[in-house]
Image 1 (tube, rainbow, N blue to C red):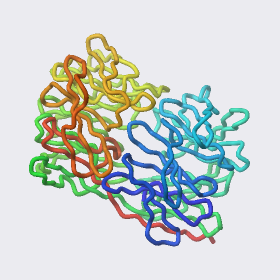
Image 2 (image 1 turned 45 degrees about the vertical axis):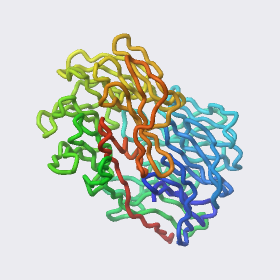
Image 3 (image 1 turned 180 degrees about the vertical axis):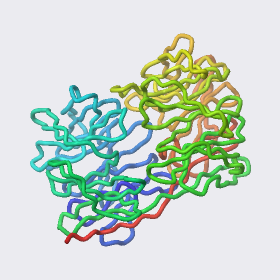
Image 4 (image 1 turned 90 degrees about the vertical axis):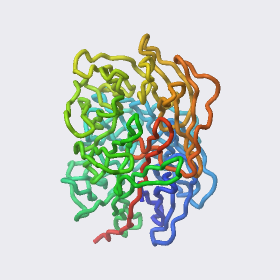
Length: 518
């Protein structure tokens, strides 16, 4: 049960759970019973909230660009509310919604249909915070918002007056986002991780006092205050899962890891894979193994790690620390030897890609105070870091000749792009394609990308030569099952010859509890 939210009358809980590898929206009565599946289409979902009358569930659909949708709580056809939006908070009368937008640091308001959008708060003068709405204060004239700087692992609470467009800082807390009212306008509940344990905490907006509500090993998350005064509902459960290799020709599968794992990256020769395991909410580990799971080597442990790409020699790899600032990127041998940190640029790192001669690494990140991705060019020996190009997405691969960077853009102008390394021009190749990533094929004459649909994943091949696409994309492979494209980062990878696909299979067991009020 991920991202659980309580209905206004306290009788039902909406949440997401994976079905065929895709997070779908469910509804379950707080009294128990079988959950009702409300969505079944492609794209992972995240529940935001209920409509004030309880008749709809607002959720985000993560596929190419974030979109806000609403689905009837008793089942029915979903409707799209807003594109490139997230973190929906409806007004008390349900006539309008507040939300944040990809690539913007402000908060917006629109009619519940998504029309007549307006900016209601800009972050100017607040120290380069990026804002997202959380809750409305009683009366509906003030908004409780979260604000975070890209160089911090915590966010601050702000009270934003919607008439005067002013923000008051209410204090800094941990990074967990499942915030609900305890006493409306005065105190809030959220999950908080301290010393590796995740429990429910109460926070006073007036005196900034923190009080622990649940105790034990947890993890406890998604607190929900019952409107009838029964107490606090919350979810307790641990994630689990597998990292699985599917061998296309034999149609057989092998579990590489029998634990919560993601971000696989297959070596160029298709023989090895690096991946991230998630043993705890605040800890991750980088591993390397053979493609069948043999000869495992733990490379490093960190709070939130991300995999980059393998070097062309199949002997070295790159990785980074997610959310770290200044950006921390590393190269290391596949056996764990020769670990070295690359020079930082003040950015937060999102991706790493080696040049064919292994002398250069192209690093995608964001500069402080900017939502726009920047690509930097770093020499592997640490010399001459330089800004390469702005606002051309996240680099996912480099062509074998080293002349073009392949990149993926998210947000309004989502799709597949390229950057010429000679003139640094950003060129759109396939606009509007909803995929998880793109990489060059082994034939050097095409690039590949995966698209999820109901019950299956299709990998397309786009013929390409000298920086130009040739004809229309072709179906290269239809995988007869679905898997998530995103799970704590990119959740899959395929070998360049499409002989093997490695993907995450997240799972777990969760229980809904009621902490009675005394």
